[in-house]
Amino acid sequence: MNISISISGIDRTDDIDFDTISKTDAINEEKDTLSFCVDKTDGHGFVPEVNQEVVMQIDGQTEFGGAITQVKKSLVDGRRVVFEVECCDYTQYLNRKLVLKSYANKTANYIITDIVSEYAPDFTVNNVDCDIQIKTMLFNRMTVSECLEKLSEATGYYWYVDYDKDIHFFAQEDNAAPFSITDDNGNALKNTLEITDSIDQIRNSVTIRGSEERGVERTETYIGVEDQMIFPLANKFAEEPTVEVDGVAVDVGVDYLTGEEEADCFWSYEQKSLRFKSSMASKKVEITGIPMFPILVKIPEWNSINEYGEYEFFKEDKSITSRSEAYQYAMAQLAAYKDGVIEGEFETDVAGLRSGQIINVNSELMGVDEDFLIQKVSAKYVAKDKAVWSVKLATMRTMGIIQLLQRLIRYRTIKEFDPENLLTLAQFADGLGITDAIDFDYAVSSAPYLYGTARYGFATYS
Image (tube, rainbow, N blue to C red):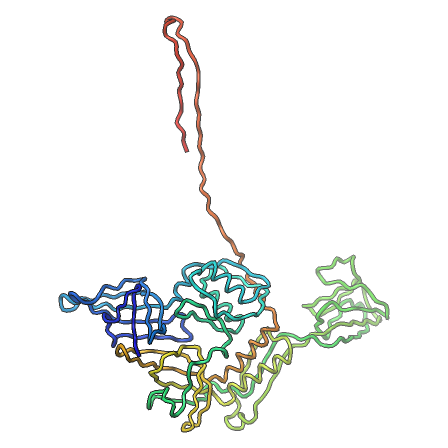
């Protein structure tokens, strides 16, 4: 293993104290960080400066790329200075400009490519892979990384910037780690693999509430009583119903929208009612339409309940528009959490792991065969040829929920409502200039030998 660090294109490996190098990469943090110390004395070392580019490589492969964001200087022993250097990866460069854009009927691929080309042209999008259609999406003075996060939340996809300034936007299951962990493959250092089972997040009785679902056409029949003009409806109809009075069709309008002279009765979606202009006493009123039913699904998992007791979970998601979707979502929750969650950690001296990757741990000795999501990777570089990575894991049982949501989203149209208008103001230079001049000839009659022309001018003001 050969570790090298360059700063502003100059190899500074020999000037850096390797036992001070620390790198952190966490899935729930916006940037990867790198820190190290430079020890400068007469004739040795250098002065690091903020905004200098830093690239660290292991065996020729880039392990970190970014820039210095902070330098702390300490004077030690008179002629010796220690520089404590903090670096952030290239993601920080995505936050220099604010995006003011709106999109309609474009894929996530198109949106990301367009934003990057205009606001971050130094970056590439070779690993952006999301063809989900977006009906409307607004970015009102957001950084590029905030735009990517917003798209990530809308689509259920993940993103990060690699150390070559290329943006990755992908479905989680496509991000596999370069190796797995077993009892004897040597990828985990001896005595470092730990796996913890927990029922802290157990869910074995899941209730999901969605929005509303269209039913099958049905007819409600009423007989009007004395002076009755308003009929409360048993169903909330999806659209304007048809109405018959004593077997004769009448004109139906929308209450508060249709003029009183334009219809015989008026339907209210919100009030769930039908209003006539005159009494319907003793008349037969038939109202036919498509009813809307609230989506509410509850599923228990009895094996888990019998073993652990009942742990209820409730989720409301108005984007769920059918009982089938609600059922799939509930089953995914049960599959992920009916037996609790598993967490783990290990140390390795093999390079290549990043947060967000999926790694398999198969240990016969522990009785574990599980896919895990890498939550955090912390590295310590103890010499030019040796590094140790500490890795934090979380169970990938929740992957079923993520994959389900990604599948459902593909069949929906993502539409966002933003109450704030996109407004761009342009400044113009403005000024006023005035020029005035008077020309006239004069002759001096008392002195015929003096003739001439005089011109008086006024300066220009602005």
